[in-house]
Figure 1 (tube, rainbow, N blue to C red):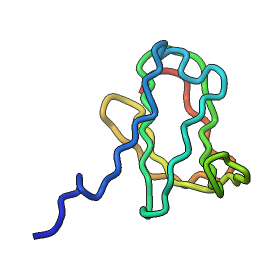
Figure 2 (figure 1 turned 180 degrees about the horizontal axis):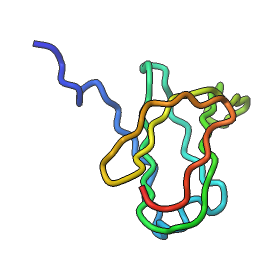
Figure 3 (figure 1 turned 135 degrees about the vertical axis):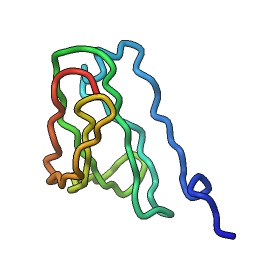
Length: 104
């Protein structure tokens, strides 16, 4: 019998922002995540409050945990825009994409 999906995942938790309405205040970044043993990653950004403010989401590849050298890369994303309705998978360029103001 094959392994379950959960055994294939490496769950990484970047932390909870206490003031959820200020989630994008100050260019928030995550720790570096090694992808040496993985083909892909899923990041979930939850916006639970607030009706204003946007952020540009980007992903960078890097050569070490400092990072000494980093390069913005293209990626795919999907947005939940209303309730539990998940939008189509969309390609973002290395410039990233800008979130919309409001929840979800």
